[in-house]
Length: 224
Figure 1 (cartoon, rainbow, N blue to C red):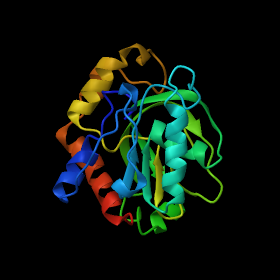
Figure 2 (tube, rainbow, N blue to C red):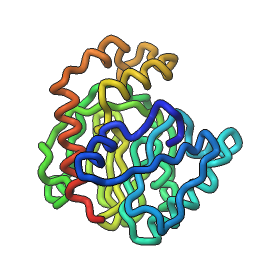
Figure 3 (tube, rainbow, N blue to C red):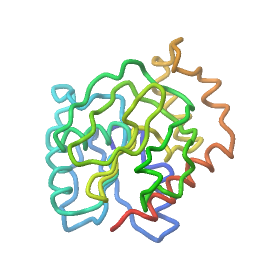
């Protein structure tokens, strides 16, 4: 975790349903990642900082090293938003500003490869999900492009069948969305791809059930 208000949310729900134990590493509070022998699967969550903000957040340096070690160890890794950008950076891809911020509930379109994938092929070709990002990433070399939106071409990728980057937030719950709106309200300025707090918070139980079902199905199908 990079900030206290962007935790595992629905990932924690999935973990509990499957009887998995989950530990949290609060990098912002000075905690250090576990040893490689102490975990099986890594989730790298989001945050409002950028991957290059190492002077302000020096823990980014050892975190990137830890992510690289985890990938090299052959483990399953899932990155959400900032997490996906960090993984892309570790894999040698460029992370940069997206032409516009994308904040709110907008659809993504699955690529042909995603529709044919054993991990994402169960998803519908188009899916409305929750977004909160200003940066984007180039596709890491060797990664499979999975999804795009009107505002951001690279929304998801899969590397070696076990390293997944998601620019969007299908782990979101009503509480996690309320928390990010409360803590990042300054970003909610009038723009084409930025919804108001009222619109964001008007999402229904069916909206959350839809994205969490997508998350759970993906996590069920990932190896490890």
